Image (cartoon, rainbow, N blue to C red):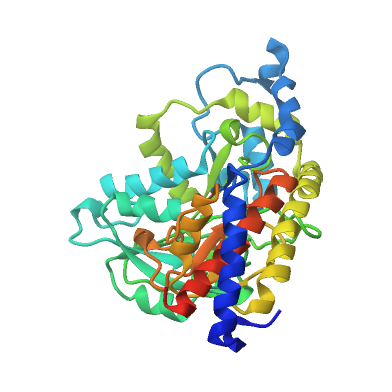
Length: 425
């Protein structure tokens, strides 16, 4: 195939006629396919559903001398703290074990900042004239919506292959109104980048004007390789402590894509000083989270090695799906020169950059042909992609055969949108 940039106007018109016929044929199949969110597929849920039976008798609910069925242990069962500390590489006393959703814990930290301030806040953020938050983009839409919901000003930071543009970050934090930054450091959402050691070191060594500047370190994909072996990752709490900023980070993780998303366990990890402060606030809000579910996960996952073995089984399900998408893009789109993407080795997404000015149109065409995807602009603050280019592809939910059908439609639609742009339609 010849790149579109090298074709004559007549050749482009002929190609548009061909692609339009393919689009009409796709519409005629009346597809109903969903690639909108990073949900585990049925095979992954079936893989781990035996977790529901690991606590069969009343005595199974004892964690040492602690009865998991009863009140108490606000910050989580000791065995659960130990398990997640091993997975994340921090200390058990730095772990808080919550409910099923890490997003809930993130929201709670931001909310506490607004209502009470964080440990080093001179006053609650709600009493500040302006509160700003740094948002590396493309990034995770739900992060952006949390801070937007509190009326914060979102500052876009360009994402590089090494992580956030640290020159831009270091400049931005000189403003005392900047209270934090969102980070997905390993297999970032949506590009699948891994932060470099230099980026991590520069983040940990930041000298922000705001004394309560906070790194919201969402390590959602910390053990979520699907291509190759587990990639060790540095403990951000240790790095910050060694850089002289022990209280500057809250790290988050969950089992949402390890066991059952609707019935998993989420944690945050932070300094012991932050932990004491946050527990004092949280004790007014909750007596304890679901310790039966915490114990269920401890018994099922056992330890880091056993958990990584389980993730290998997830990987065997995930890799063919990501290969189906990436192979189709390389076959159908790469020769045309109308898009770019990365081929990640972990995480849950593929980030596709279409010809500028065509993402919304391409996704509208996908919807018309029965393929639902994350909305254009979702990966940027306020849902506005200035280039109208980035599209997040979520291959995890559909079976491979449905995924192949969906990505075929997607390729037709991005070609059609590009041709319309080139032909001035």
